[in-house]
Image 1 (cartoon, one colour):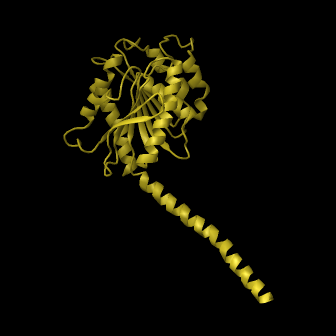
Image 2 (cartoon, one colour):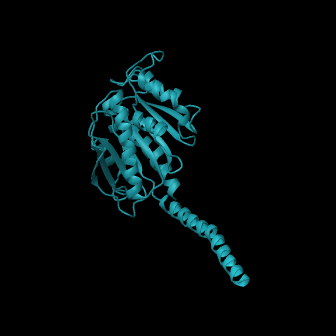
Image 3 (cartoon, helix red, strand yellow):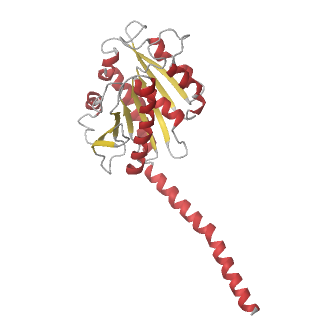
Length: 276
């Protein structure tokens, strides 16, 4: 009887000891899978208010040169007001640096709308990570698209699941249409108060378009510049770049060859280094 008791005890001990080994094996497999998934590093674009999923098409035509036309597949997503996803295009399995556009059925301006769009961005990111298996990305936001990215990073971004490598905002009105930095708007206060939640390893480029260092025809220069009060000393690096001359007005910035070159050099080239 004692012998049977000892045999049962030994079997139980073996079973209990096997659980940590099994867990360690599963953890290693998961780690290898995450490493494999990280070979895909998409560039995710968000247009500004009143713009749809086709807003970046001219820029994409410049970035997808004949030499690289098949390299960057384009997936376009529109998040509907009922939180459902509508997609156009696809991503080939071999494409390690696809372009993804996230737009919104409700694409209107205003604090409350931007808050909703930020939540819908969370919906879109969840859909993308579930269906396309990546754990890092870079981002571009035009106009209010930069506000949506900033708010998302502060409120919804899960740094345990995802890494955002680089962010470029283009003509983003961090202090709305206010030219006096002392007059803080609701959106600026929101982003400023939560700035400590921004990812610490993020590299940010903020592009301002102007012909006279006053505005780009829509957004005051000082409003774009207000981004430094949100990002500086919170992220790894923050750089503001001013684009002047032809096509430096707010609506033309995405057609500006200087801006396209900045996206190429600071977003695409850095993404290549990550996936190599």
